[in-house]
Image (cartoon, rainbow, N blue to C red):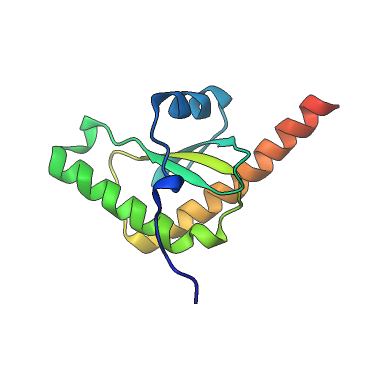
Length: 124
């Protein structure tokens, strides 16, 4: 059985890391999340969370972050390695952990394919 941990090495912490992901302009959206992605050379998938004040007070924003982290923790082994993801919840939605897990797996696989296409276009 694999351990489901969310280690510090799986966090995007620095503003420069978030900026690098946003500058790639590789985004995927659905009714629950907007997900920005960039490739990394670490061989593991890292996430950063961006929950604005539009989502409510500090208690509500912290709840969103806990739910998203829990969803990531459960599906981290199903995500393609080597991605940096910034996850932004949509403003007017309610989501369960299971909904976010499905959304996150779909987003990561789509974005991985999109980044691979961008990379092959640049090389040709």
